[in-house]
Image 1: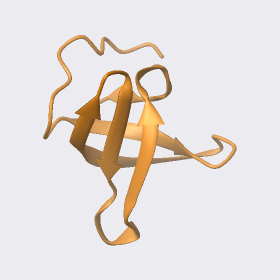
Image 2: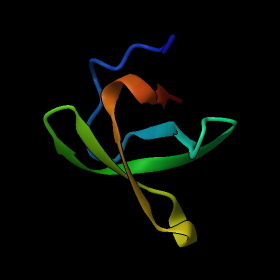
Image 3: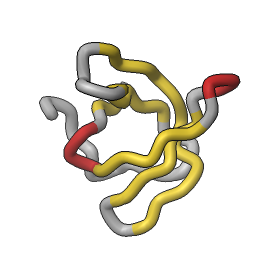
Length: 57
């Protein structure tokens, strides 16, 4: 992605792609395990993704 992800931490707000990537949603990081991130999308639940598939807001 085109945003710098070096300073991501729990609580950082990010955009994540859903399904085929046509729709992006924002949420905040609630767990980091290596390059795996769990992002809270509010009432829509959580999504697990990787560092290379997110954008920092």
